[in-house]
Length: 67
Image 1 (cartoon, rainbow, N blue to C red):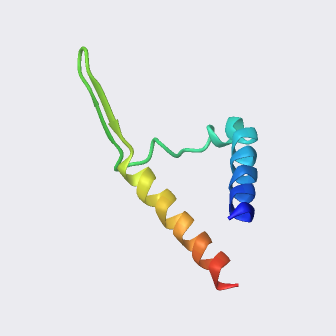
Image 2 (cartoon, helix red, strand yellow):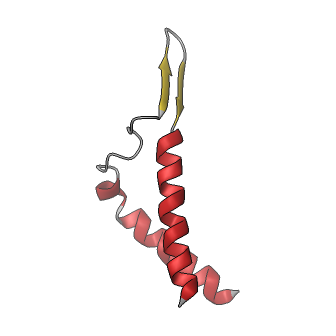
């Protein structure tokens, strides 16, 4: 359990440090993301982005657990 928490902490630290670079990626503006803007209302649901990130993480975890 300790090793898992340390690993997750390191991963979050790396993501936090790389955030300026990651924010330039096109995630969040993909076709299929739902974006509705009206006068006093904005709704954004990143459907395609969420599916893509889920697939990538699933493949990475599958490869990691295989070894």
